[in-house]
Figure (cartoon, rainbow, N blue to C red):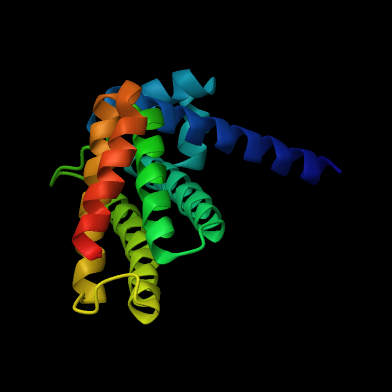
Length: 192
């Protein structure tokens, strides 16, 4: 029983650390957070923080990975209610606008970012591109999307449009709904 209590406590501590990290990234940007800030915001001692993570990059990588996995799961769920590939692309535009509006600052990833953080971000990009690739292929098979699209290349381009939607919504969250509608129009004009 003690072991269960300890693992539950560790999970709770880890969740608080990750939540604090995501919150700090959202409000201060990726490169502006420190171990001291995370410990303070998580309500844990710095030593406890170091017992869980070796440095700020390892915390940020886990936080980004967890946030992105939740985002992909939400997007995948949203896509299941869409009937057609064009509706799925519209859902994607709305999802990215919503994420941007709720994220505060968009993640600013510079060349100084650790390979661990870059890997977490690249994993997310690949997951999104795989979803887009699938939607493009489905759209070509049904005739909803242009036959001359190259799914590998166009998935990257569509993701770039979605990233732009997210960035705009992060900068002006009060306009997220309009940004989603405009973004969906632009996106659909490019692929239909």
